[in-house]
Amino acid sequence: MWLGLVLIGFLVGILVLSTGGGGAAIYLGLLTSVFGLAPAVAASTSLFTAFPSLVVGAYGHYRTGQIHFRVGNQMLLTAIPATIVGALLAPYIPDKLYTWLVALILMGLGLQILIKRFLSHNDRAPHQRAQAAIYGALSGIMVGVAGLSGGGPIIAGLLVLGLDMLPAAATSAYVLVGTSLVGLLFHLSANNIDWSVGLSLMIGAVLGALCAPRLLMHIDPQKLNQYVKPFMGLLLIVMGLRMIV
Image (tube, rainbow, N blue to C red; front, side, top):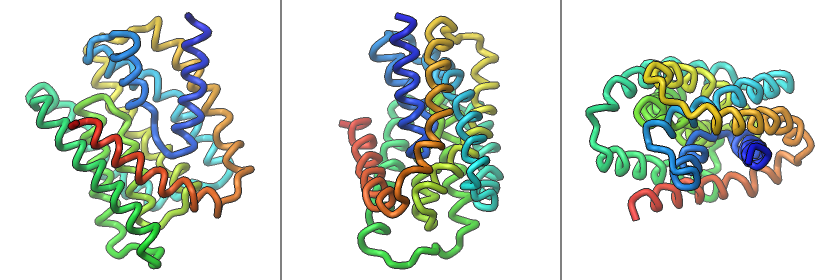
């Protein structure tokens, strides 16, 4: 049981940090559907599991020089306040309304990535600062309300803003460290973490995060952009559809 949880955490840690996510959404799904945890406990446990691996992964990306701090800081300026607001409003937002909002956001971002990948030849997005602020706020709301890491809007926003997949994944990890920390502090105050499951997943996720930046450095950036960008766009659309279908 313990070894299986570590292995799951390891695989998820590599996957999400290679694609710019934080993993809390995946952990949230596993904890509710596989381990049968209550939604409130699963939300807190997922953030607890994802946060240390984000720190390790972001540091690894920093060592390889792939983080774009300027756009990352622009996102953090709105993401952190939005996380606080989302955490305070969470008890008053109907689950159905939140589900639809997140689903529409994910599908819209996925479509933007696909349009930019196949139809647009302009690598630099206009009004970058304003767009970065919007994507940061969307991510923060997702973290604060539902215990998600908020990686969907961040990585999608960075791709739409013109970053290639590798620096987008690195910058996303940097932004998610800040938002996940704030979200985790709010959820910790409720004292509803399943420590036995969370610790095992966290150990595996940290090991995966140690490997992810090094693996990415050995992948051809052009191939990474060619295949992973459309995959990310389709994945976001599918995730959104699954939430409402």
